[in-house]
Image (tube, rainbow, N blue to C red; front, side):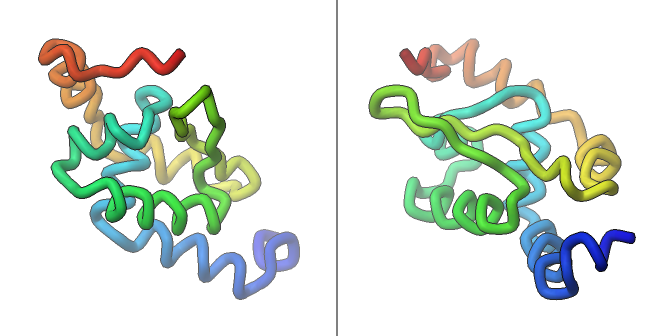
Length: 112
């Protein structure tokens, strides 16, 4: 049972984190590929602090994870401990065209 594994508070935190349109869009983008904060800023048209704040909330809820590559912070999906997380992510719209547009504009970062 989910509640016994996570606890009510943690389960509520996960659901609150997914209860925001911007964060859902971020999850939809991350379902296509891992992205750097600067790429999310460009795609979403948000400031870097705003994107970072949303990502902190998702990370705190253990729905995304980060890894550092030099100066870059790369985000990817996590959330596998939630049995329903994969079905939620799968139900999100395919936003791969936004990442393709970023690549076409030459603004896709190669984080090495």
